[in-house]
Length: 270
Image (cartoon, rainbow, N blue to C red; front, side, top):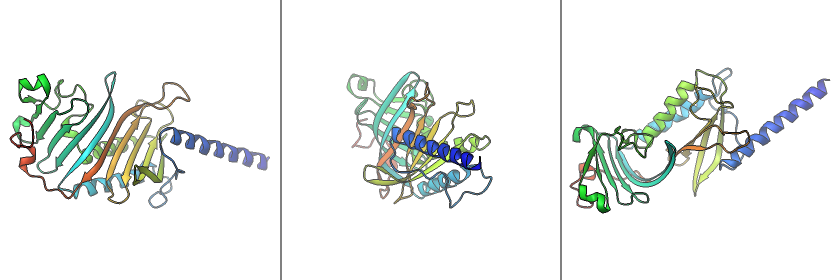
């Protein structure tokens, strides 16, 4: 009987591992997952606690940058639409400032936000016939500014992206039904990344997402991608992408000034 139970447990373990690899392959990560972080995990500790420690280190690494430029690629569900955009961004942490130049959808659109200026509104310049209106001043959380976004511009940038994950994970440490895996050999193009993935087996009101995945550039220690997947509508179906945010071509050595966040900048089209 003991041998039979051991055999069954071994078979179940193998099935679970194979099923895990199938889901991982389906969602675009190759390589075998590590089911715990041996360096930081402890007995009876919530599996998200080590993940949170890594996430907070990521934020500290971002905070070491006073400013940066990057290409920002996003796919997100807004209402009943799935919207994808590629945007060149400039971000300065103090005072919090953002410049955006849209490359594909609404190509040529420019957006500037500087905390504490312009009545804390964002300044938008459109292209084509819409440009005849001139510069628009919009509230960051107003319906017009949020029509194609899940988050306002006040939440833009790498640091804000990770802080949202930390807030989510901290709330989820109150509950069970959480598994965390680590992938040490993931890649985005030629960039070697470490991936932290949390998941919940069943839909619950306290779980906003089925799977959360954070990609960390091994070389810089910066978080460069966050993916959020919903629960699949039917068993065996692929989890739908709810949010997918990627920062690439990050230039951290740049020095940004007030001029980079000014509509009077001659290199802008305001």
